[in-house]
Amino acid sequence: MGDDLGVSIFGITALLAILGYFIYILYYIADLYFFTPSKENVKLSAADEHLIIKNLPAYSLLSSKHKQKFKNRVSRFRANKTFIFSEQSSKDEEIKLLLSATAAFLMLGFKDYRISTIKKILIYPSAYFSTITKQNHLGEYNPQLKTLVFSAEHVLSGFENATDNLNLGVHEFAHALAFHFKKDLKYTAVKFRNGLAKMEKLLHDKEFLKRVESTQYFRPYATTNIHEFFAVALENYVETPSDFVATFPELYKIITRMLNFEEFSFHNKL
Image (tube, helix red, strand yellow):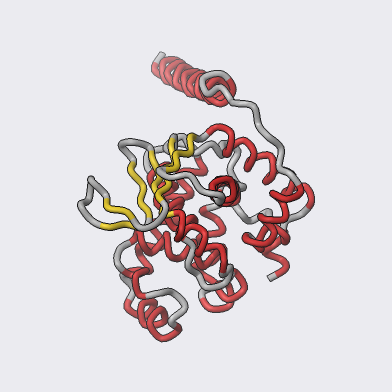
C-alpha cells in the first residue's frame, strides 16, 4: 500500500507540474498577443535602413533572415512605445529610429522582445536636471515609471562615432534590460541573471581588474558597480566586438550567452 501511495503522489505531482507548465504557456501567449494590443507598424523605408547601416555597423553583419527579423522588430518597437520630446526638432524621427534599432538589436536573441518594463521614452534636447535624483543627467532609467530618459544631443553623438565605445542609447537600455530580467522566471531570464552574476564575480577578481586597468579597453566608470560594468561592457560589445573578443574573450562569451546571440552569424565574421 505504501508503494501505491508513493506512486499516486508522484503521479499527482507530475500532473500538476505539467498542468502548471501549460497554464504558463497559455498565459504567455495571451499576454503576447491579446493583453498587449499592437499599434499599426510602419515598415522601415530605404532611408531608415540606410541610417541604421550607417549608425549600427553590426546590422550589416547579420544574415538576411536576421536582418528581416530585426527590421520587423524595429518597426514594432517604434510603433508601440510612447516617445515624448520635450522640444521638437528636425532630428526627432531619427532619434526614434536609432533608439528603436538599439532595443531591437539587444533583444534580437529573445522571443519576447517587447521589454514590458519600458512604456515611455522621454527625450530632452541636451543634459537635463532630474527632479528625482536632483542631479544633471545625460540619461537614466526609471523603473517605477517604466520610463527611459535621454539627452537628444548625446544620443546622436553616441552614434556619430560607432567605434569609440560611448553610446548613451545602449548604456541606458542595458540598465532597463537588467531590471527587466530581474524577476522573470523564463529560462532566458535566468540565463541572463547567471551571466550578470558571473560578471559581478569578475568585477571582484583582482587579476581581472588589473587587466581592465592595463588594457584601458573599458573606461574607468565601468568598475563603479555591477550595473555600470554591464552597461559599459555592452557599449563595447556593440561598438567594437572584434576588439572585445580579442581582449576579453571570456567576458565576451558571457555577454553573448546573456543575450542569446550564439546563433548569430556575425560572431563568425569577427
